[in-house]
Length: 609
Image (cartoon, rainbow, N blue to C red; front, side, top):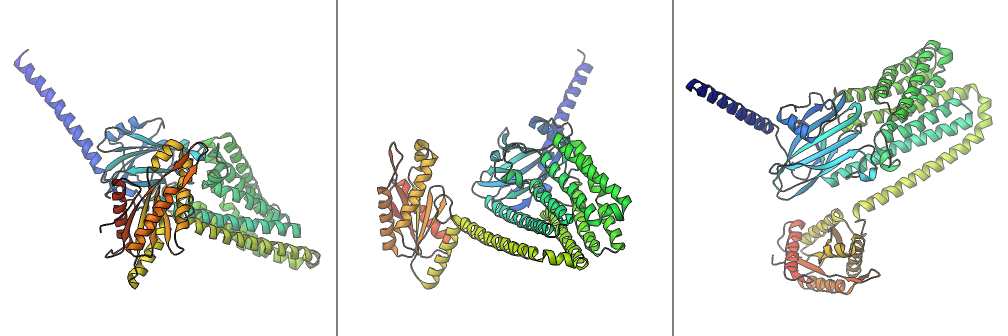
């Protein structure tokens, strides 16, 4: 080999090495350009926002390895719209990093922001680890009981170690084509459940109001024999099924097995069909606007085809038909405007109702196309608009009824007694509904304060009550003590006898302690087998109480039918002295508890602090 050949070969090797080095540097630089979102476990629904990039897998067949390869090839990029990918085939992958700023492990719930999703898969790795773990494989068709978190939308719980950074890949998939909102909300679990309870209460309120309007319409229809009210009753009934189904509540509470996305299209199609039928009857378009009536008939046919497409699970056909239906909705407002011009006063109010609905559906279309941001307001605006439309239409029908009553005074006299009975029945229904809501509210408030297993204060309630006791004692210079309990070797009870026996042990422990303390003392379950007791007492009384309670627990047992399960408890005692907060007092008691467990368990130790 000549010197020139060797020189040429060395130059080629050097070129390849430089290219590989540049590629590695570029990949690292690209990864570093995706900044980690810093979290601390107190998140209350904040979004990933700019902290994630997306990649469109047009075939929908890419797996995690393909997504990682796409990330290394710089195929991921920031979302260019205001939240939605638009109507696209295939699947979308997102990648992002989370860094735990706190000094302890935390749990976060990552919530998909919308209901329009068929599949969701998630993968996680510590950036110091070489491989990913699959942490979620969710599908709309799976039984609801398989959800990682009981929520109407997809939620993925994640664990983040103290001071650690984690990389995540999320796959969002639809059947054939669909809208994807690849953003996620970050929640501290308790805060997410609190907001979810507000959502549930709001939807229950709207559904209850709509049901009440439907009942009123049915009763009015029976009283007047006017088919307009029967049509409204059916229309309201379909809406009662539509929105809970679309928003995921039907899957959560009713159709928990074998749910399919087509149910959303089917209920939507029935709502459109019954709405147009009601409009034809109410506006009398067959007689007064015959040309527009043909368009309304076409809308009914289109809704029927949409229902058929939903039953046969034709995704693309369903999307096309629902788009046609939404585009034709303004025809209803035009028909009502013409009827208003012709002298029908109630049609003016009807126009307002349909306009509100059209604006709501239009905002939904803009949201789905990514032209407006996906927020709680834009998410629920179509629902509120639909409910408002029904209310306004109810007003329009009231005007319609008033006009009929003026024209048919004799008919009104014949049906007066029947309407009076209907009124009384409605008042009873309203009263029963109000009472039921009050009872439900009272029960919900009690559940929010009570540990569901033991029946004593939960952590939140215990903290609130003990903090009030702490402030009162400090202001009045009264003594106060904090006792922290931990059931010794509780894990062995679960391992040897099962979680059912473990639950019985927790109940028995709570019942025993509760029976031994005064009414003014505050007992609460802080989590797992850990309990807290705040009491008005000085040092001697606290020590005596702790020893008395320890002895009481030592005497109790569970009879499982095979063996008697006995257990003991370790107790940490802290006296309020110079502590600035209830948390410090609990920390001192917790340290004493730790010493009690270290020194052999089944004893009470007083905090040195």
